[in-house]
Image (tube, rainbow, N blue to C red; front, side, top):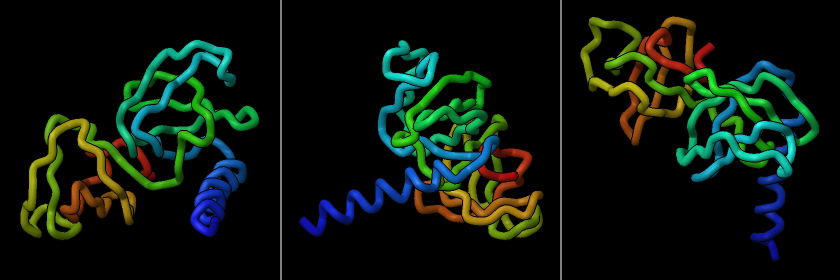
Length: 150
């Protein structure tokens, strides 16, 4: 019973977060499979099915419990608020991103990161973002990312 109450509390907190935000803002897909619909209701058909948890999306409009979102390619559609979270994520948007030890090209290259790789963003200063990709933490130029970097 306590576990159920905790789960309800967590889900409720996520919805409260989404209800209080004014577009545009960044969000991320919180489930393994999320349907983007052509309108703000289950009655509308899906135009995309995303199978990638933590994928960043930009919320551009609100209609009740539905959010009109835009993905990195510019595709837009509606997702229910339960499919989204406020986890700050970003996707590498250049053919090859570079992750450094510190906020400097001279600090030592840790990894080269392929386009489309997603990580959790913990801090951005407008030029550099601290990001965790699969447990590897470092800094990538904000200009090489799409997502919660602004």
